[in-house]
Amino acid sequence: MSAPAGGGLAWRQARAGLLLALPSAALILVFFFGPVLYGLWLSLTDFDLYAIGDPSAARFVGLGNYAHALGAPDFWNSLRITLVYAFVGAPLSVAVSLAAALLVDARTTRWKPFFRAVYFAPVVTTLVAVAIVWRYLYQPQYGLVNAFLGRFGIPHVDWLGDPHWALPAILGLAVWKNFGYNLLIFVAGLQNVPRELHEAAELDGASGWQRFWAVTLPDLAPVFLFVSVTTVINYFQLFAEPYVMTQGGPLKSTNSLVLLMYEQGFRWWRLGYAAALAFLLFAVILAATAVQMRLQARERRA
Amino acid sequence: MRPRTGTLLLNAVLVAGAALTVAPLLWMLSASLMPTGQANTSPPPLLPSRVTFEHYVELFSHLNLARPFGNSLLVSAVGTLCTLVTSSMAGYAFAKLRFPGREGLFRVLLAAMLVPAQVGMLPLFLMLKGMGLVNTYAGVLVPWLASVFGIFLVRQYAQAIPDDLLNSARLDGAGEWRIYRSIVLPNLAPVLATLAVFVFMSSWNDFLWPLVVLSDDRRYTLPVALASLVGEHVQDTELMMAGAVVTVLPVLLVFIVLQRWYIRGVMAGSVKG
Image 1 (cartoon, each protein chain N blue to C red):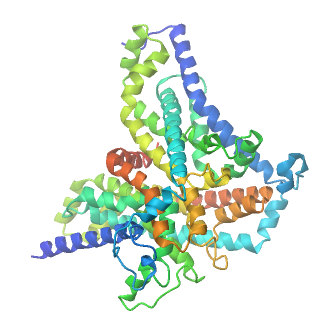
Image 2: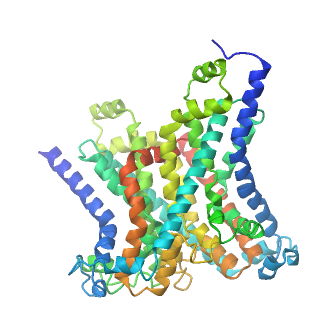
Image 3: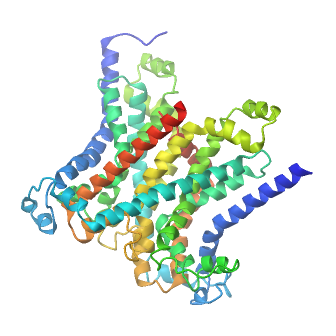
């Protein structure tokens, strides 16, 4: 039987639907969309420490904050570093995840759930806590990283103290911390690749490597797009790693855009300028996402 | 013979990878049990020369880490509860109840997922300051009151509840609120378990927002307390490792026990809708 007709029932359902959706919708509108719009206004003012005490002290400066950012070496430095995080760190992370997923999902692998859980463990750990742990691991004299590499004859490196090495060191922690997440998504994707396709390719005499390129990768394409887009977005927002390990140093070589925003906003209380930085980050993320979608779409047409 | 060597090699690589992955965590645990100063010797020792719990004792006596531990527990538990209540209601409504503006509202909420959280953070701080909520538990809780991801997750799952089940209850004269409580909620139990683990872990591990909104160290959550502790005790490797263990252990335990639910959430998050 179909749903009982009658205006009364339909009206009661509509009222219930509205009431049930209301708390979430109101909270998200007030505490998320509200601040985003407020932030847009803030970014057009010179809101600073004085304005915190007396908001009427803030003056409208138009696009002044944006112009200031685009003329500030600190902004370009942080943008460059953030782009390195996003376009070196994220692909590295995705590559490690995919390689590990292929190994975990291989037919002859034993204890699959065990490996899955172990590789996933860093994902659930508290970032601040493990960033502190890695700070000690990277310690030049007593750290395990140098001790381990020393066994292979690699000379000691002052990982977090050397402007050339601090950024790669932070990426090392970031990849370790989150490769397990995408691994899980890749494993789920791999299990959806039809077995028959593999078997057919095997009968045709395709090697493991050829099967990977011809069968696995194309079938994984949608998962791959999802994973790359979300991972790049996450690496654009890197904050706690440099905050805990290097405070953005040495010589600002690890200072991400979010860290710059945090410092401008909450250390120097230049809230108008910091709000503009947040919107610039948003614009960069949107642009990067659009580019990735484009590239992937073109790839698929080709 | 070749396939067997291949299998052996494959499993060896996996074991080596697993060892590298857990090494930082095992070293953290091991160093936390070393006597003061042992971790700062060369070559770096892997195991404590003598197992001691003095650093844990110091954390909970002098440094009073029990307080931030309790704060984190409180914020994560209440936040999880709030998200479960609001998301289960909204997720069900968006999936099953017809009301004007439903699709439009859902699309607006989904758009929130596109905006990085940092964009709203500074102005939210100023808003809460105006409301007198800066440096309060309520202030830390604000981002955990409702969740777009939660609504999305519940909605996906709720779509599978048969309409006949709901309609026959309506024919029996049950009110909409009772249907939600006694039919919908029990049916949503698995997805709510997933969401609970997810939100609990995210709020426990959250750093930037509590760092921004809290200024009084009596209200610090564990990650914020730990980050401020490392400023004063950077030389005390063993003590800091004990602090890291205390922070990481609860979420690691939750993960080990409730793995199944958590992993399901990760997979569901990757489903495009």
